[in-house]
Amino acid sequence: MKNNGIKKGTMRIAVCGIVAALSLVFMMMTSLIPIGTYALPCLAGILISCIVVEYGYGWAIGVFCVTAVLSTLLAGDKEAVIYFAALFGYYPILKGAFEFKIKNKVIQYILKFAVFNAAAIGSFFAATWLLSIPSDEFTIFGFYVPWIFLIAGNIFFLLYDYAISVFVTQYVRRLRGKIFGNFHK
Image 1 (spheres, rainbow, N blue to C red):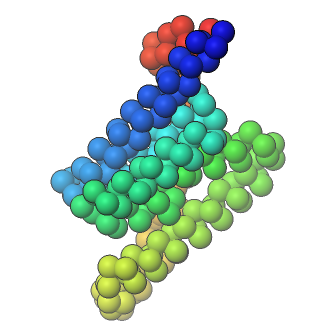
Image 2: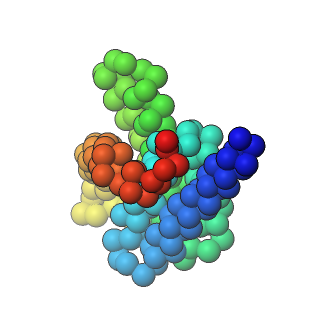
């Protein structure tokens, strides 16, 4: 019995390490792919949802923290790191908590959009302050474009939320048994 517990603990650490490494690879690719600043932090975060399914929130938070710290040190696109750390990395963990603990869909979406908008606005100010982007860079033909980006971001966020749901559903239905085999029995 004790030996089986050691094997399961070792398996958890190994799987979490692999997911953290894959997430880090996505984050390191952000400087190579032009749209990677936005898309790759999303993919890195979606991978963390597998850890929520398999091992729970605590392990997923650990994977998020490891990926965020290593991305800060190793990834070339620091704006993408801010997006990952400010929202896309931990949102799949929060999404699971919101959906399993709160049964009212309206309250779920209010909380989800509140988290997104707080993170988006915080990321904007963090990026402009940390990356020293002048505020006049955000004005095009007299329009202050961050508000337009925030509106578009809310639409994108709804798609991201849906993509996580589809990914988790497909992961549980199609991949989970193939990847973990007898470890769930």
